[in-house]
Structure formats: C-alpha cells, structure tokens
Length: 174
Ligand SMILES: [Zn+2]
Image (cartoon, rainbow, N blue to C red):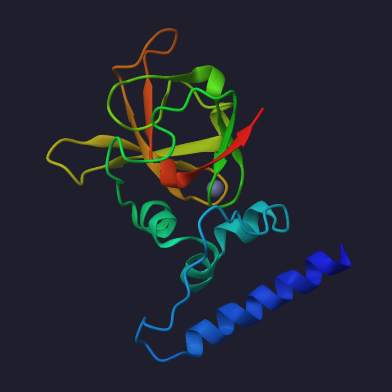
C-alpha cells in the first residue's frame, strides 16, 4: 500500500515535469512495449482523470495513438488478429478485463474480432462519423480508451463483431 502510494506520487511528479518541458515533443520518452503501467492503483474516477501527458508516459506511441487519438492500426500486421491462445484480453490502458478468447473468432478482417465482451458494463459506445457512414465506436468503460468499432455482421449468438485494435489490448494467457 505504502509503496503503491509513493509510486503514484512519483508518477504525478513525472507528469508535472512533462508539462514544464519545452513544447518540442522531442524529449518525450515513450513507454516500452508490453508495459501495462500500474494497473490497480487508481480508482475508476482517477482513471478517467489521467492527463494526456501521463498517458504519453504510460503508453507506447502506438497504444497512445489508438487508445487516446482513436487511430486504427494496420490490419493483419498486428499482434493478436490471428491468435487462438486461450486467455483474457485486457485494456492496454488501465488493465480492465474486456474480452475472453472464448468469444474471439476469425473475421478475416485482419483485426482481433469478438462477438461479445466479458460483460456489458466493461465497454461503452458512441456514434463515430469519421467515415461517410456512421459507425459505432467502442471504448473501455474505465479509462475511456478507444478500442475499435462494433459491426452487425458477427456470428451467433449476438450477430455482432467487436473489431478491436491489438494495440488497445494486452493479452493474459489462461
Ligand atoms: Zn481501459
């Protein structure tokens, strides 16, 4: 508990220094791949209050672009699109468990696809008009990190396809 508290304080100091740095963007040190930060040390409200500067220190560049800027990674060259390994897919931002390999299927789209999240309250949605037609955007309910989109061409029993960026996920083998 004490160590956790001190670590949080340290993170705040780092984030504070980040704000005072010259606005060059050159001195920014992106997190190393695979790092899932200090999950479990924040309340839900604290996760929603994480600043953009802190996200930059917590996430890799690719994770940041997807989770915090709603970028879409390239199909087929991402980490989990073809994975069939049993386990759980957590949010790469806050480590909330989002999807199970039990509901993962091969949509042949080149992105990890699931027909259902582990529970309806771990994700939120909004309508996205980035393309000509409206799409249903899906994000992590805890840190509000962008995950991907939901389409209605999925398999039974839901008929839904949660099309998720690998960069938004961290995999925990069963
Ligand atoms: Zn999250």
